[in-house]
Length: 262
Image 1 (cartoon, rainbow, N blue to C red):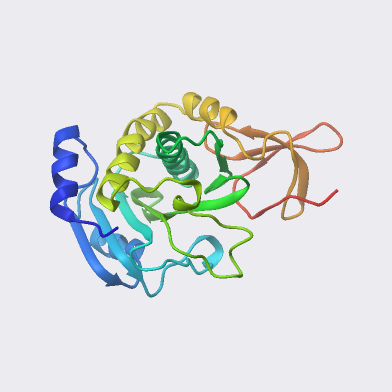
Image 2 (cartoon, rainbow, N blue to C red; image 1 turned 135 degrees about the vertical axis):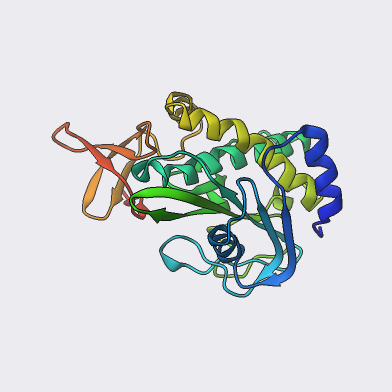
């Protein structure tokens, strides 16, 4: 499932994608997010794409290591130069999750699978309760202004997962979705991402509604740090809304979600 830059460029041109060029492809890199952040500091434009077959320093939120077998994971980052407020920048990870969810659902249906693909706030895409994709949004801020956001995406395409991840993670091939190439996969995600970024920047109402329809947490009791309550979706900035036992609505801007056992 090797990524071919020239073939991707042909797909992107045919679809008239604003995202996905210029392309930087490396067989091995430390982190595509680090590559994109460095390029952003050097003036790389909106839409620049950074792809690798494997990473030696891949990471997720809270510094977690991202596992990825060479040729079996789609590892890419896209540079966004958008007029987004500092307090809303982290919400772009959720927008990325919705884009990946839409693409993955399309691939599963093409494989004859009807299993719903859901988004778990703030940045995971899950199938059957197991993670198939993680997303990391990192911002560059100058004088309280966001000058760039890098959206890093790690998507499990196939291969055998390590024992320690087998119960919590999954792959596309495990659900019968295998009739695609890495170039098609990245192009499909960016095709879904482009309009969703515009909708989020325009106010976020459609982002709230879309997550409501595909929310892995809504209606469930969850805990984020010291805050616990029933998940009620997100607000237009992408923050999680929790209803506590007294009926008050808590707004959670970031954190690790836990689902307490009954």
